[in-house]
Image: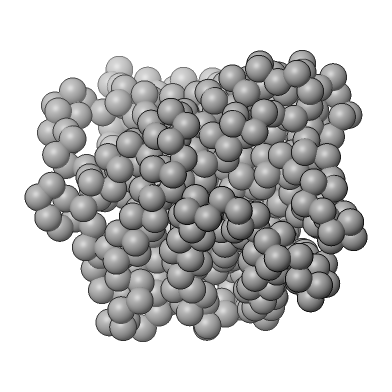
Length: 537
């Protein structure tokens, strides 16, 4: 018996009843020929990404922004930066940096980096484990900071779980792909073949590993729900400048350049390449931060911001039309503005080092980077790219996207100016501006969260031209890409499909119709009606 006939026989027995001859022939073809592309792994990966995005949105809106607004209102009312508990301020920062931005970055990386390397996301269960550990860790750390859990044990458990979640994600991203590729392929793609995105991504994930290790060390050393000032500054500086900024620059080479229609970036130029110099600079910045040389680290951060912005050409005229279909057409302006905030924030932090008496400058600089750069970049780029990664969904509302960007920009501008003036000079107008900035940013966040939540809640549209459907259309492709079509086809006459656990990948509609005595045109009419009802807007 040939391998194909044996496989067909095994499938026949596995389903508990004899399958029609057409199904058996399809199973035999599947065993003899290369497998047809399977859309199911893509759908499963999209579910994992959706979990990370949904988690990030929750941390952004509730533990992050609402707590941040509460802290700022307390500061403005008392006209005292130390008015809220230090542990609350740190809990807000951890929720924003790790809970929101960290969840987004890990989810997006698990979704797209295996595709860039032409490998599958395996093992998928470990990706889900990474999500569970990371989410639980951020929650435990936040609750401990607010006093809702045993502070010391909660800090250690939370930071330890985050580190474990990160380790699981890196196994999936780094170790597992090497096991999927032959040794010869791995050798051919050595360090010399790394592009700018890969170099900056490696530097950024290395920075996250260091930041999480320091975070755990700070938790162990803490005697209350708050970290010591030196520990906290190290965690924040590492998380922002050694993790988020390099990752943002790396992904910008793939997405900002393309979506905004910019000229090809410069990060691959030079000997050594600019991207390699930036990645090495991130390592030196992390070392300086660990050593407590914060002035040196801030100067390196400013150099990183300037060189990265110049290398990406974000302020040069576009050479192609920006990709604005289905989103707010003005978002490329905000992409450019985000990099202005990056440089401004880094410059303010250097100024703060040179003028230690200016109390408002460190916080203003940090806000310019975290909200002005990071949040604006995500608010502008996220609605453009995330829906397509989530089973090719469409953004729910371009108007909500526009409103969130404008409100965020106005609120950030007032916050940076107000904090610098209020904390430093005790200007009365500045204290009055701070609550206004808080509510503007809160409104922006809620609109952004609402827009993406509505996008996630939508059923993915059917990107199928009905006129291209024919008797040669594969049944497996239909039911794997659009699972609701399985019941639809069964009701239209495919009785074998209704009882079969698995479907051969090469089985055509015409063959399935012949197997069950169903008219092919009736099946096609049912499919065309489904795809017409679920066509993109």
